[in-house]
Length: 415
Image (cartoon, rainbow, N blue to C red; front, side, top):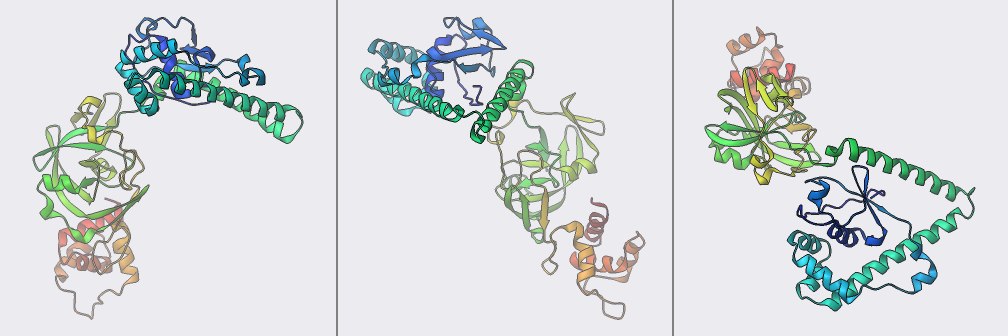
């Protein structure tokens, strides 16, 4: 409607406009006599035509305007209109012959649906009459309020009302232009999913360049037989819209996209609604390109086509918020982790630097921590890292030189 109200109706292509008008009356409380229907800017005056005859297709939009009615005066208001028994019988018959219409009524007006199922004509008359008169009363009250406001055009209340009316007219014109020139903006966008294999197990991966880290669900981790590789020292909390628990991290595992194998690390999230989310860390590390023109994910010479909507698992569709994770970009924005029990920092990137500054590090005159040797320190310092940071990283990784190098690279370069 011009006021911005929207309703979705599931009807067959051979349904006539009169059926749509009945749905509009039930859903938006606008009687058919007051409805002005527009499609692609053209007024629909012949209500006997079917949707296919008008060339209205799936996901198309019809604009409904409420025409000015002279039945909102107090005199007419006192004589409440009623739906005749014949009209109620026709309505029951038409809805029973149209399953999609009956489904819409069930969703929007359960009491009316039950009356139709019982073939209770009197109940249908009562319910439809109540709906019609409630709408008329609402319109009457609105017009009375408008009269009171506009009685003094120079009052602040009247000026606010006029400004709001101008704004709503601009919104209505803007919406009409969108319906005519950009109707696809009212539809839903299919998110980007690609088929993949993790440890040889087929999964569906969600591509989200707005997520910082690549995330795998606990269920998918178990299905891919990788639970034994989860490092629980990397427990933490993912924060976006809400929060979610991070159970740990798999530092290195294979993932197959198309015909090529890639190495990837995963943050393991509890109650994550997707199998796997390919985040910015994975996409940047392998210089991936989200090619919307060719509708594929390109990594080097490999092209993986995004899945069409009908191939996306139903459980993955319409996921708005995933425990602070995301069905849309920007969620989760950050992953707060605790790489080691004795070192408390909120992000591994800052962990080594923060620990080097805030915690006492073993001095040259002190014995090196267990697992930390001068040979390991020498090899890592030759790569350009400071001695204190190297010692702290080796200490955090219990002497594992490769893990320490990975932690140092992540802290310094972000990967």
